[in-house]
Amino acid sequence: MKEFYGVLEQCPLFDGIRMEELTGLLGCLGGRKLTASKDQTVFQEGEPATYIGIVLRGGVQMVRQDYYGNRSIVAYIGVGGLFGESYACAGMEALPVSIVAAEDSVILLIDARRITVCCSNACAFHTRIIYNMLRLVASMNLIFDQKIQITSKRTTREKLMTYLMNQVKLQNSTSFTIPYDRQELADYLEVDRSGLSVQISKLRSEGVLECHKNRFTVLKAV
Amino acid sequence: MKEFYGVLEQCPLFDGIRMEELTGLLGCLGGRKLTASKDQTVFQEGEPATYIGIVLRGGVQMVRQDYYGNRSIVAYIGVGGLFGESYACAGMEALPVSIVAAEDSVILLIDARRITVCCSNACAFHTRIIYNMLRLVASMNLIFDQKIQITSKRTTREKLMTYLMNQVKLQNSTSFTIPYDRQELADYLEVDRSGLSVQISKLRSEGVLECHKNRFTVLKAV
DNA sequence: TCCCTTCTGTTGAAAATTCAACATACATTC
DNA sequence: GAATGTATGTTGAATTTTCAACAGAAGGGA
Figure 1: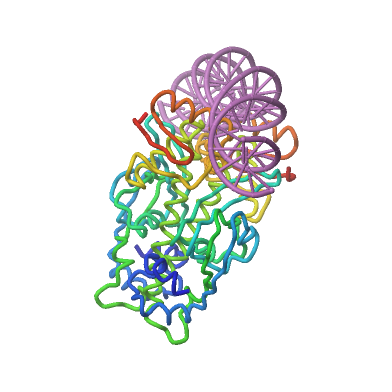
Figure 2: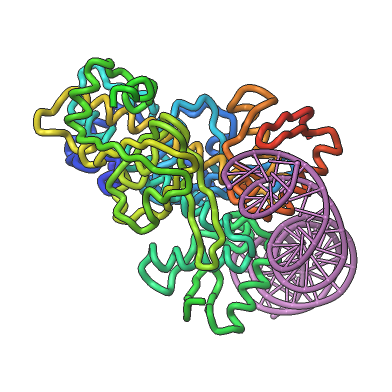
């Protein structure tokens, strides 16, 4: 576990908590570690939403699949990121999405009630953690908000450009890598993969975009 | 203000706080009341995101408008509902959406810092309110999640049915009213209004749906 | 009641998406 | 290096959406 203290230290959930306090706190929270290999389902849609997860290594996707098998990627959560916290904190019984490892990953699972309900010894950290959790859940809102901004657009081209311009802002550079391959990007933008390829090609030939695999460079705004 | 105590008592932000404590608390939070007539913009996209709002009467819409004037309705917030809390709690500088009164409305504005930062007298309510806020922000996530579920669908018909089935579940009845007229529903589902009308007509003629104005009855699942 | 405005439904043409199928590029393994 | 499998790009047909224009319905006010 010690090897991941660096991640936990950076994790916004533990903001304001000193590293040497972490061990005791983790004991109090009763977290358990879990490893998942690429493409493995960590949680299935419909399972009880009692855990929050912290990505210690790798990355996971929040995905939803409809009866026809159409995959929709709701979000990608990288190292230090949380998942499940919104559903647990909102008091949902069942997860409305599945969590799938996008790469070989290590995840820390914490029973959400241990966080939101004050422990018997009312340790001072809890107040701080709840406050941190508030910020985190609010941040998840922003992630969702961005996704809504994208899917609100009507055409594949607009969806793609909205996503890319957002990445430019987030990563503070016109050149960046994305955590999706083409099919995954299509599933995130909620468009057809081949149609997405067509638009990428067009934008490339127009000199708007450069891309090699999952590294994109935006050359000019449109 | 007294006339709205009933609303505030029901408002989840004040869960666990007794009515007689409310007056003092509101003083501590420094809320101010604001009235807005239908279609009036309460907050403009880009304004500082320092306030959270509680709808005391009427209802508001979170909307976004792109450069071409396409309106997108992100959510409808009714009486007792909150808005702006996610953006304020996430520490955003600027609102990414506008808030528009959907009807003649009365709104209570509270400086978000007064809530998230403990007041000097460290009143016991703050802990409770932060906890309540956590649940609320998480709930907003569910609202967003539903919207994503809808816009993830590819066709107008699927989007409409996803929305309606969600309402059936939420309002716990196959017959319900929605807070949108046709144009607004189209802006919420992110589809063309006339195309939406076509689908409603089809579903009606197929015996799946009944509707009079904004009252819908789902007759059978599809 | 009449007029006017707004809302809703209908239609046909244009544009965009999806779908299926295939070609090519790339990476990995043997 | 060859072979295999996966990922990406390309194409044309079918489907769906969007757009624009109009007609009818509903509601409010004079």
